[in-house]
Length: 368
Ligand code: AOF
Ligand code: ZN
Image (cartoon, rainbow, N blue to C red; front, side, top):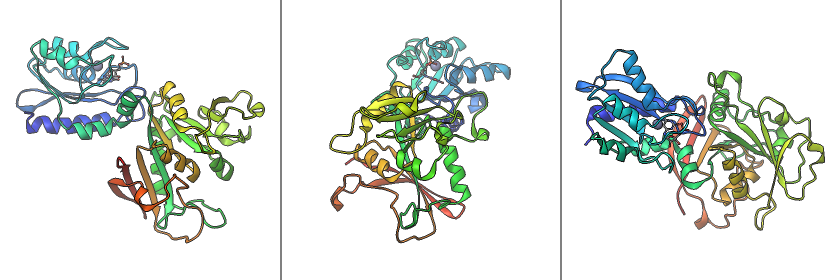
């Protein structure tokens, strides 16, 4: 059984891991705390970027730098230590060599290449315990775990609406429905995502730029998300802001679309959705997965959001609700293939926060 000190250390390790959200893709976020006698923290570390040292190695190094002896210590880590030599050496071995006596981890590593660290540690006589605070740790690594387990990116659908669920007024105007605080929060979501997806309708209406403001990009890492435009008929204009060189852009079009005006633009041809007018969403997610995109922020508009929901391809919903009413105008969500109340997509609300005058509601679709 994990001690209260170890549980506190795991909470800390989860928070450390979260510091690198948006910087480690395609790798997981991982945090580690090394505890000495009487629960004293000897070292802390987290994984900062793909290809860089793993959390455990950073924590052991921090302990050594501080002059601590880690022999007999306990390592508390959010992910089962790896067992493989990849871009760096196996952490299980590093922990054994450092003389760590006990390892407590939250989530078993589902990556077939890296798995087996717990068994290696146990075989070397280290006391190993898994399963401490698994749920919050897995929540923090939702994008990476979804990718490894389901071979597709984790999709967050974000929308902004008035309290009566409208995303624009009757005349189509929609600028600044929500507050500056909400808009800043959306920039943070973008900075954490590997890709941002919009439909051609949003492009025509808003000519959005979709790049992340410089200040939000983490030091030393390239975290501009890939801008993905779902553009069945290849209607995007060469001068659209989304095609500038502030960030990479991928335009997804139908197999028969005329793309002659898009020379030099990264395009991908996708089959059409079965029975629908748009593109096949699972095929899109497959293309993104092959490009090592772990997380997608779906920014709209309503038609595209409906298509993603109908395809069962939304893992998290974040609604920014402004305390305003419009009464008429387009809804935040278009047709999602739901015809009657018993088919309503029910959600589990995981967080409600206030952002300036607005409400931010975060929810997860319940399994049907
Ligand atoms: C990380 N950071 O702190 C831990 C990881 O690409 P590599 O060779 O560095 O290996 C990545 C795999 O290692 C990753 O998919 C996961 O299974 C395991 N653990 N990875 O990036 C870490 N502890
Ligand atoms: Zn490792």
